[in-house]
Image (cartoon, rainbow, N blue to C red; front, top):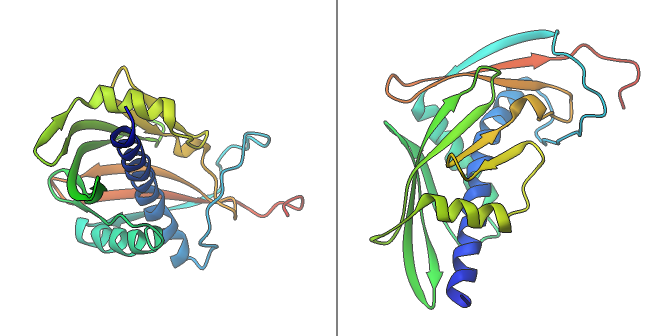
Length: 204
């Protein structure tokens, strides 16, 4: 209940935020192609405007996403002592090492991503292991819910062992919005819809 638990907390906090960063990073990459601002920002629902503006779809393959993820993680983890690999095959895998009492321990997190009807993304936790020791997913998620400070648009559901990314509540600095359209790892088909708002006079 002391140093080991603190190490586990740090690992899961970083791993969870990396996961969020990866998914949001994919969206950021799309906006870079339009010359938009690379920096994302969440705006609380003081202005709930409907998305009725111009939109386009982008289709990516796993190899493209993996290259993007690799670039994003290098930047995200540059000041961290922990290194991770995240890649898509027939399932998604987050793999890395962390220091536990002077020893390098390897961890693996397996999950399935699902697109919800409204374009949000649900991550269904499948399996977690540290070294050769499997840990109950529900226990880790309860721990995460208590300890993690996450954005308003992220919902941790310990009972169903899922994390929901409410992309419908996530807004970029330039007011662009995204919806996930399809995530099919078996058929190598990953699609997002990007919505470009018309300029409003009030916007700063």
